[in-house]
Image: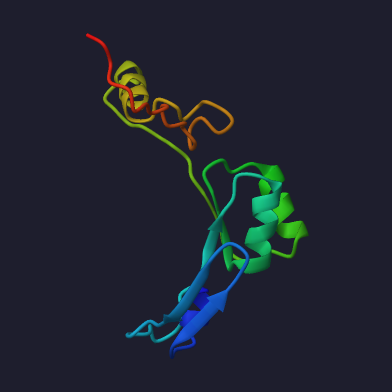
Length: 125
């Protein structure tokens, strides 16, 4: 949809998951900026290769890069590496834990936290 909008004019898009009608960008960039797609696994890396101009990963693993490249991705690749600097190692570790408490936790915990269930009932005091 973004690439369609950068062609200018009024656009509509009817798809399986969403529909937009008569949308436009009024001030187009001189040239369309590249679209980098975030990926954390093989399927999203393949999608990044197919629909994006580059890859972004918060968990830069060789398997993700391999999936991106095997699927034809040849654009830039950006990976996040969390670092922390302080006067001494103890202070740096403490600061890192405070700022990024889930950085070293594998899986989806660092990105996907469940919302607590809501209830219409009031709590009894």
